[in-house]
Structure formats: C-alpha cells, structure tokens
Image 1 (cartoon, rainbow, N blue to C red):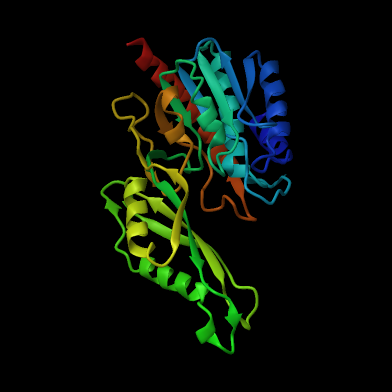
Image 2: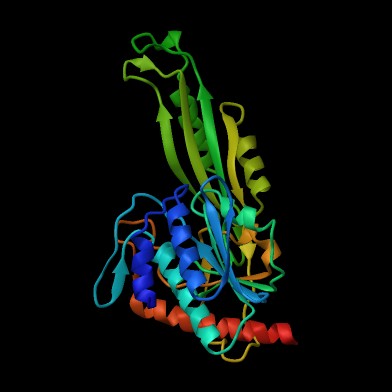
Length: 339
C-alpha cells in the first residue's frame, strides 16, 4: 500500500481509546509482511502496543494508535485525506511506515517503529513501553506539527473540584447550603489567578471542561463538581499547590492527571536539516513517558487545529513531505551514533 492507501485503511479501522486491538493486529501483520520483527506488547487487556524493528534500532519512529471519539470513516479529494485520526495520528503512522520502507530499500537497517495505545487518555501505552526499551539512542515522536520541529511541549494538570452542600427546597434557601454557589466561587477565584509563564513554552492556560451539579431547578444543590485542565509551562506540583491553596477552604481538589512540560532539542549542526521550521506544542504528547527510548524529537504532518474535529484531515503534500523528513532525520541521527 502507498501511504495514502495505508492512511485510509488505518482510518477505516475504528480505534477510539481502549479499543485499539483491531488496528494493532492489522498493523502488526502489515509490518511482518515488510520483513520486520514484530511484537504486540500488552499495555492492558486487549490493548497491544506494536513494536517493529529491523535489526537493533539506533532510531525509533513512534506515534499513537488511538483516536478520540466519535469514529467516522475516510474519504479523500485531490489535496487531502479526511476521517477520524487522519492527522492524529494515522496519517503519521503511514508516513513513518513509508519512511521505514524507503530506508530499508536503501539498505539501511537498525531502525524501529513503535505505535502506542492510550495517548489520547493517559499515555498507558507509553508508560508500558518504557519498561522495555530496546537500547535506541533517538526517538522521533510524531504528532501534527505541520512538519515543524517541536522545541517543547506544554504539560497537563487535570483537576477535579468537588463541592458539598445541603439540599433543601429552593423556596427556603436558608435551610440549605448550595454546593453550586461554592463551586462557582472556587472557579471565580481560580480565574483570577496570575498563571505561570515560561520564556520558551509561553503561557499557562486553563479550560473549564466539565460542570455538573444539582438535581432540579427547585432544589438547593447538595453536590457539584467541575473538571479543569491546565496546559502547563512549569512543574505540575507547583500548579497543583497554587490551585489547592486558592480554593481548598471551600472545595475538595482531586488530582486526576499530570503530564510534565518538556523542552526539546534542535537539530542545529546536522547537514541538510537546518531548514526545518520550529514550533512550540501547546498540547501534550507521549514523550515524557518514553525517556528510556532515547533523546526525543517531535515532528509530524497535519495541523493540531483540525485534530479532534469533524473536519479532521491531513494534506497529502504534507504527508509525503513528512516521509522525506523522517528519512533524512533517521539518516542524520544514525550518523550521530557512528561518531
């Protein structure tokens, strides 16, 4: 299959997080047919990572198998391929597989491919893979950066705020204690905070993603909750302490997820790679959980701005450009291992 055909084939196998087994098995068979040694390594029941290699790898190309919901199938026009996972990250898988095929055709081995479950939820696949590193020196992680080299990624802190009150008839509010009002007060305090900044990674941002509370408009709410996601440029524990110190007198703060921010390496000094544009990723990746797989780089085709939308797509020209970039990067990084 050419990379366009493989992209569509992968998109048309649903693989929403926790349902990755079918696409993993397909990809494992495809890579076996390319002569790879293939391991399907369970990160959880029915959730295999796919690790393929030709020889002992110095450089590993990696991205993720899972997508966000809802699934919708592929289609294409002259310029782009559409469908769930088109750019995040099934087109990237296809580009990395094609890059491996081209490298092998040139007689270059010692390369690996690592395709992971669970990136869209909690990086379960990456955390499992990090227990079994192959001894590689470099990891090229694929996410939609429009083929710009990532110089850093923001981290994540996801917190739950839980407010407790006392239910009562809304005609007699003095008999109750509104959990919703406590929650609103807590959120307003947090919205007024001055959030950390970083000279490379930029500003911390926050999204109030979930608000829940009450049972009826004529009942004083006895409980309420919210989930907030901070995109971090500083250590997660620093942000968690700031949140807790600000609102823990009126709500309970529960820590649901932490992903640290990461500063990444340039490719300066490598012949032929100086022309790559650079970017800072406001999103998180699997990179923090793959420390044992080598020095990380971040780059891939497609735009994060259309990922997770009903117009998700990947430009065909960018997909082909990514193949060329991955081939060049692997060659240059393998030269580094020889020095």
